[in-house]
Length: 361
Image: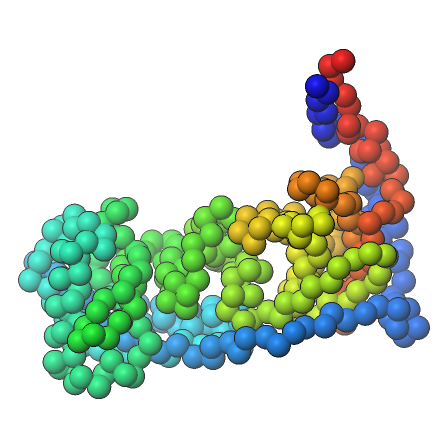
């Protein structure tokens, strides 16, 4: 059996070639009207109608032996503005804060309660029932979900005061909820935005780590944006698909996604999305596994090829090469050429010579 080891050798010799790339990119002229006529826009099938508002009841919850409940009033305005920016104005949270409820239990006892256990359900259920008895049965119809805003620091992972989401059943009505602490540390905006994403139906994407808010992007300051796929799930980006048989030129407008099958079985895709004047490229396998490739263009790269860095190489059986070249941002849109083959630049040629080295007989 023969083994192939793919090697990328980082050589000082690339430095002058990278400088040559920068000069080439800087020297590119703006596309004229005749040039732009060669580019095709993506056809988008009927898209889902995005949810425009989400109303949640903010229920302050304090515990025995604690002082008066307190929180920063502008905190929720930051959350509202984060979602407005992420959705490009398509979505906003509606927040109604109700009077504080004081639990008979201590913070320590609740913190040691297992997350989503029967004990937690009983504690939070009692808070809901007190709220309903005070505000009236009809209050459940006014909101899409509930935030238990717990006084004090974040509890231990796996406990009832660790930020999390769930569903409570009250009078046969399903009430989605999240638990959030008033003291969230440096990442409080990110943590709250992440948990509220669950109220909108988003799942955790921890494999994406810091590249997505629903991964561990809540740990960044400011928080990471929602990734392309979260934006798509929320209906904030339009998605289309093309089967590429020959070289074509495309234009993607802001918040548009293009999927291109990489293999005959269409289990692997190259995913290209336009946002913030940049082209994000991802690999998607079987609709579940997503790998972030890179962001284009920059002052030293306007291509994503099998030999660029970062680059795209298919990983599935029967996958074909893809060359995304001449990536440019003009008038808020992304213009690029897409092909199964291409001509390497000098820096790509240098890298091409360093890959595919065979080891063994």
